[in-house]
Image (cartoon, rainbow, N blue to C red; front, side):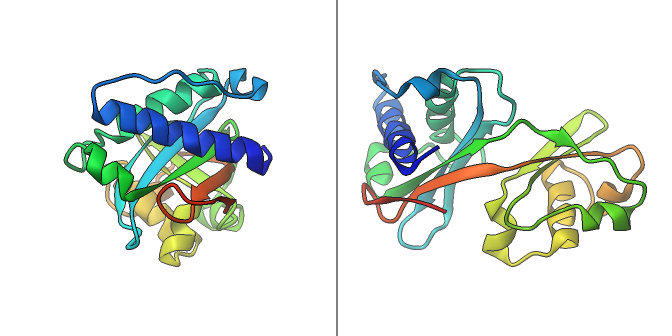
Length: 193
């Protein structure tokens, strides 16, 4: 995606979220490429603190990007970790859109080999184990200064397990990359991260 498409994606996410907070829907007119099936996450952050306010998405490319974007933005307003987002809060938050590549299983023979295959800042990860899944976007370990092992420990906990479950032979780890576009300030310029 180029910056024009990224800007269109972020602006669409904001419009959808603001409409959701008012119990309305909005019509999206997006470029042709938004008809392709892609995974996407919408992240809503408090400004200027950067505190997370909502983050929901679809990791698999099962919907056209325009539909996945609309559904993710609406759902992020109701992230179960937080109170529902209000219209007034949305106006004071920044919006970020991460468009994902399809997840690919990482093949490895040992925990050490897995660690060597993770590129911090490029890879997002999904852990699947005993019917549960956890996902962390590529930007998360950068924001917290994690190395690959810390990334996997937090991923394990995000899936609802102890921090070492990533080492279990029954755990499956998938990676994906993301194109990240974010507002610098609420309704401000959109930049590629």
